[in-house]
Length: 223
Image (tube, rainbow, N blue to C red; front, side, top):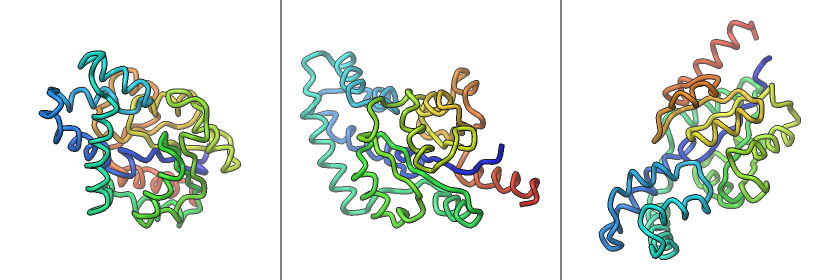
């Protein structure tokens, strides 16, 4: 079935924000006497805030001041954001422009709160490319449950079979697969393992490669 829409995750797909967060956590690692920050952060990619807290406490101890650590890292992140904005992943504008030119609908489905999503996309000058925005506060269950992608497809007026999802996290791919959508992984921090490869419709190196794949399909269909 023809791909009628593409749903994007945001962090790690649109923005190179996960690396930026890790750098913020590393800046204050010595102050909080933590090690292997990068390794621990990788375990937190694509999981809920509650799960992240559990991972940190399991690794650093029940007494680890997660709220303080989060708050200080968040302050550093905000300063970097206000100064330079969020770095975008290669191929974002090219893919979004291609989709718009070819009449393929787009949505953004992120675990981040809706208003934050709109602000970050707006600051980057790409909010107008998206037909629908679904934030994590609009669904009860987070990824790997499929709710957020199903809600986005419903908002677009499409069946799951007509939708492609672009994700970078394991839970994102699991959610798209559970939704019955074509799950395309564009790896960011994590490379797909055997399970994720079995659930992914495709694994592409970049958003430009996704554009080229879709372009080939459109050319083959004579559209």
